[in-house]
Image (cartoon, rainbow, N blue to C red; front, side, top):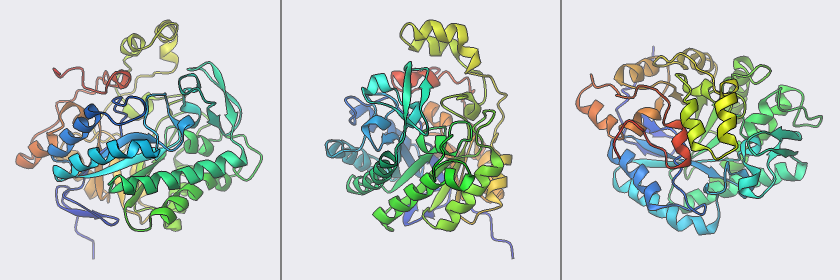
Length: 391
């Protein structure tokens, strides 16, 4: 007998966590931290999403190590951060929603100059944004960063989070280990796919062992780096199967693209080169104006644009799965539910309209006003927002 397709707006369990519906605010960097700590603006950002009806909101990006930040203002896990994070989780819970923390290590995406710490990659490599070289991760680095993920998950419990989402995407550190293009190691963390997936599996197990069943453990996994020689769907599908078999996760969210080589591959739609350039200091501003098209490509946008690839992975694993990519209205949500996904994640649509879920609950015909111009992307440097909406 075929299982009934769940109603996306009905309550659901995500691991040990009860959600009021199956809609999750995806992790998108908010740009609202100061001194690597929570601000009132960050709390209000997530409170509005919670008040707007989402079942769970995701705080991004919470680095597990100080050198794992993409830039110096970004939050990283340490005792000083916990009081602010507790205020944030309390504010979200007061609105009836759950809250997840995205934990991870930026690796080669980290800005070493901003962090004043060396960035880390599978092998020594050049980082054009900071004009420095990433250092090759040693065995000691791998063990330390694995432990840092476990410690971050423990602190997330202390801060009142309901879930953690481990970042295995976008050529951040773990994702860069997946990539045949970026990972040229000769040890047990390089070469075969099984070796390149080892780091991720060890981190997921360490996090699960640290938290037990006290909170939900999710992972965001790249399906396709969108880069020649990078991770592609067949290998990503195998990694998903291994993560499923390991039993470390409560759910898997699928993503795509490389923050290093092809950031627009995830978002689709036009690349806002002028806006990116305007957000940057010189000489990066001039460099983006001249060479931006070499990194920021335009891709045609359509609703549900990752669904076909995601269905390939969905068919091979038993884990609950979260669909991400062009979710704008009830019709796309229902299509994901019909395809076997248990949850959906939204990003740009909720950035423009934090109350969109409440409006869809009141009228199923409501659709997002987001036009996917992507001009929100460069605002991460000054506070993520929709530039089409009056502050």
